[in-house]
Length: 257
Image (cartoon, rainbow, N blue to C red; front, side, top):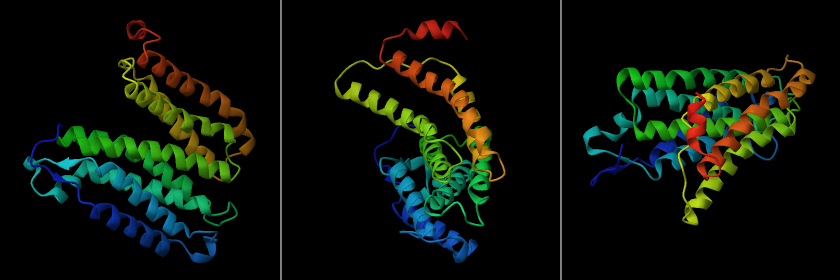
């Protein structure tokens, strides 16, 4: 959806109110004695993370005049599902400052797992009710990336995933950074292969991260499976960059479908 002249900006209040609400909810739902405080309270971390994500998504977007009330545009059915998913990932982020000994060790797995389910639901809702918007697309991408960073970080900090797994999060940023660098240098950027393989592998990663966060899953098994699960996704990032940079022909991969 292209921006039009006269569009109204996405309200900045959305990020402030959203971050405050998440902080209040986390503070009310989880007892203070189970959320051992380090430098920051987990409720504050969760609120700041969600507010930051909402600000990042909305800072370059505008509400088209045809949408009418900007709040109705933002809180359509599909966007509401996506926002809920982002809120759940923000709760997971709050556990970055909670030790693994907490009695609430099951919360990150539950929140991230429900978020994964909602990730499959929001797109279906958007297509069904005709609410596919630029805002919804950006929210979906931002929360996907955010979840892929904070959930593995919690698992690594708690010793439930090897640090090697963070290479997947780094690969996402390396790919985006490489593409932006090429554009900055006025070098051509080609379309990635028309393939659903990356989406399927992302689903595998989400399930694997959720399992790794579950306290009763054997850590030894997770550590052994990590290289096997990582390799295909890292290979896809490398493939996509080689194609986008023109080092490999896109047509060759399209023929393999």
